[in-house]
Length: 105
Image 1 (cartoon, rainbow, N blue to C red):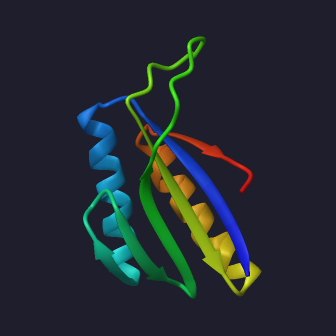
Image 2: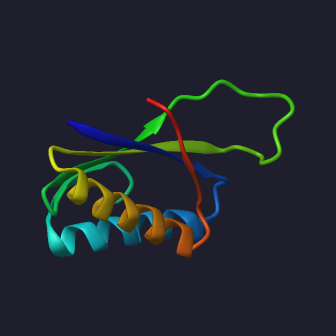
């Protein structure tokens, strides 16, 4: 099983929530999704995409005022499918201004 994990840093702007909803729409158009627009599980292109809030401890010397963090997890048996879906997730979120960070598992 191959896996990619992204952290989405949200500052509480309505545009960011709309952007996450756009990701849900893009994934549900080509696949099948269960959940809300900000917490969901999708099957898309042979991969599984999970998006859920993550509890984060406050950090004092932080560049970005942090309101919330979502964790996006993309899993697949096929490496090519994983790369295709992970890049779709990354591009969709970055194009509308969400800070996306690739994190080790």
